[in-house]
Length: 378
Image (cartoon, rainbow, N blue to C red; front, side, top):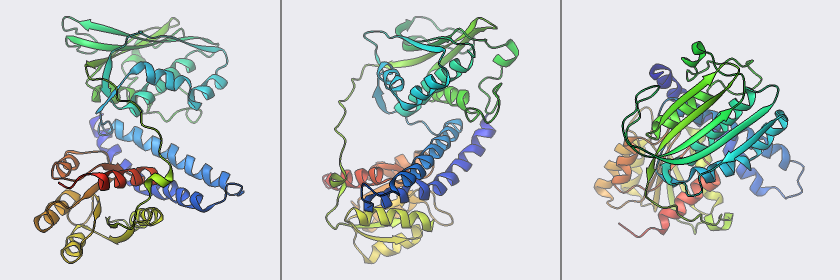
């Protein structure tokens, strides 16, 4: 698992860079197209296809155990409700008309610290697998509860004492044999007909997500009698923050502030520069960390967008360190096609702002830049 994860992480980084063009350029084109243009629908299809491919890349990063940033206070009941209202769940119901999904949520469910995106994908994978385990129809029960574990439990996983939110997904399907039970979390291990559904990473993503959230997972199954997945997530006493209203493109617009884009990949520099110019900023771009340091020595800029991984040459962290030596307080944002790392966090501790995960979108880059400019000087 660790070896495959390392390989997947490297592939995911390269694929994110490639997908930037498919996801980002449609954003720019759509801004200039009239609403009644016959090209809007195919361009939106290209963009949505790129986003689906990026979601698969995210699965690879989860497999690499480097894709989860568990920093958000969230509630599993809300995530379950959001999934049940999603297009993915609607499509599942169409594919499996004989399957019903029932819920039994704890009324006062406690919160957890987690990545909403990964938890949503986990629920989606578990429900999808349950539906496919019932070719003749049946019932899926998705339930939540609060529970205090008062003593360590050893078994399928080692469960330490403490307060947990427990998510259970049960089906009345064909069940899992003892032999298959030992391998269900392996990447690409599946009993499905390849090409008909999924990527072969669904249960591996579930396993990686639970582990990266500091949780535990248990599976009980009997052939012909159904399967129950029980996931344990540590409780937090922090409260949910209210959702902010969605911003319009006008809220992202700049006022001519100067930005330097630093990236070793020409296409990435072009995408970021085009988006930022479209948003009203003055933009320059250079191909690496050393060139960025040299540029900043003789030119002042309001903000730097720094790619974290650049080859050859120094990375984003080292670039930022050198710039701070003669430009203390320089505003910067870190970007990467990989996931957030300790080096990203170290750059943020030095004063860098939000971390942007590629592929770039107008919303991602626009919001991060606006947020950085609204900060008080440090």
